[in-house]
Image (cartoon, rainbow, N blue to C red; front, side):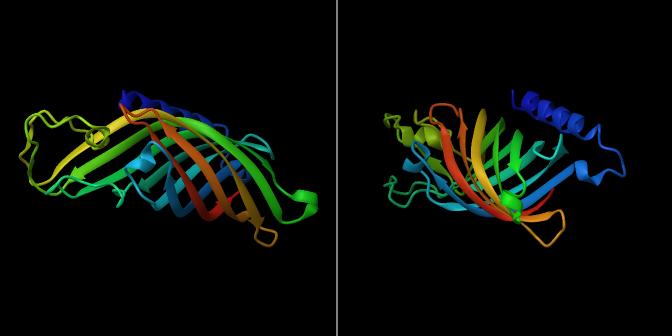
Length: 218
């Protein structure tokens, strides 16, 4: 399923670039940035605050509307307030997403260099989990949501690899607001935005709000 979503995203991004003439850079949009991600429940019950990185490119339909293909990475570290079983393996969890988004913007508010925009879309999300040592799950261990968060069952299994990893993929959606400041009279803007992301991950949904700061062209 994830391969199908990835292929669809690639086709949509390519289709967005197709109308752009080589000389018409005003139709091209690009953004890059990073910031802090805050997980919300149910994700917040298992993960804490971490960093994020975002990079996107797309096509400006006109001055106010654009279609943007975007890649996002966000860390999902273990929540320090969650009590783990004795000798539970140390874990690393990362969230990756590829989305296609619609952006509607007001470029200049009352002729000022300040702008505001709304952005929403959806696509493919993957929660990637890795464990750093062997671990045997005792037989009869109750299958609490904590185990499902890490993508494994708890039916007496033995993790035999020194480094085990697993990806949990699902479709998802996002929506949020952003603010921009145009730098001089160029097409480059500083932006800050907050977006709500919801992925329909198996058993436990992935929910978070990344707050991102960066630079945007057009």
